[in-house]
Length: 612
Ligand code: X8Z
Ligand code: ZN
Image 1 (cartoon, rainbow, N blue to C red):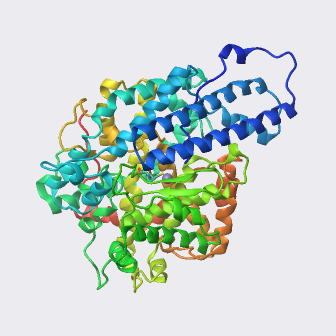
Image 2 (tube, rainbow, N blue to C red):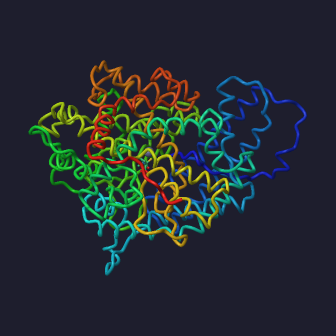
Image 3 (cartoon, helix red, strand yellow):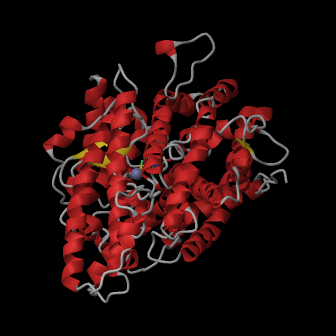
């Protein structure tokens, strides 16, 4: 997995690198420079990926040290290259070479070797702390303590507010020890960003989108403003239903929803509480239960076999579009389930260990609806990685990181009743009356996620810019959670806690705006592929399973990697050159109307008033 937060350092002294050269460089020299740089980065990138794989799937002090060292070497070389590349600044170059230099410049870690070593050690340690995190309920220890993969299931299924609150609070105890290390990570990574001409790390991250950082922030605001009214209706409806179910435990005078009642530790996706908020059934149709259907079809097999079967569903979708099956090594080398005897990072990820065909996923798969979507998500990364492997190294990446996150999800939107019936997972395709329930189930995951997807990096940008100091981490975090999501913690959270650290991407230092983008892009891609497949009908019923035309369209986008500005890649795929909430709004339009009617009929007010 390539992270766009790749961190860098320096071997050569700045003095040596700054020495002026007497003759201006030629295009041929620039070309040779790039070839050499790409070869070096490929070698060191692969070494870091291999070390990172072992660290994430077998957390020990030694694997952490080895992974930190491999990252240090990679970052050091990257810094060296970025600095040496300044020689070619201002030259007139062919567009692909100019783009490579532009992409190289979007890197920067401290140039002091001691600091880059510290940076990689702090990052690796934080990653390990999250992976090792466990909640030991009162009276339990050792084997009986709960990892996040187990807590996920309990949070999804429990309907006991006390138990849910307890799990929520228990998991949030993993992160206070991360606080100091996190503050140091911020300092070190900012130092690197500044040395390379960025205001801070947030500014560097926002520079990755073929537009200015300010334009990028404005794009997020623009699309959020389009979608926020739908979120507010959904929030009000869900709150009303939760109060019906839980009474006082769900009701707050400020109109917010308690964070632990939404079926997910971070209240980021709410599909798991569909049963609680489902409309009364009309006619004699009962909504299918995907988890039960999967369990039935997969049958009584070992957890590993079950995990692999889950992954086969994802692969099967891609091959139906005309993609080659995943390589044999994918099946041999992936981590499909949580090993019994060691700590691993359970948070799902996709890897391309040799930047060629050594594709893997790392998951702790359970047979349920969330992981069914997640295997599609992860394999989407793998199919992307394989498709762009013929590009030069610097272009082996998503058109932007939001594209990378959207591929598997755009496929998973095709998991419609028709598709499930084709797979013999359900016997009967629900009638049209089921469209609202189906859309509601999808909206609980897709729409509920949007404010969460937006606020994580809003918090981090504030932290990186210094607007939020380490003494106010939790205060700023909850101010955003309340403002955007309208959710509240069970009790006030003091600064002795560090709640952002209980979400993987904060200790993992993975930028998050990509997931907000992906929620929107995936509907743009999905619509484009539905059109290509010749589908006519309401968008939410479209499945392009088996369409080679949709597959060809997708493949063309994937093969381009990062070789062009993403706007061009998007235009070729969808006809649009910008992030567009239109297809997402079209998909949910019937539900939006229905939610407004429901909220009006129930006299439910939308919105909430967070404490000032
Ligand atoms: O982190 C992920 C993937 C790995 S790239 C499982 N996602 C975000 C999250 O879990 O917070 C996918 C959806 C959002
Ligand atoms: Zn992903």
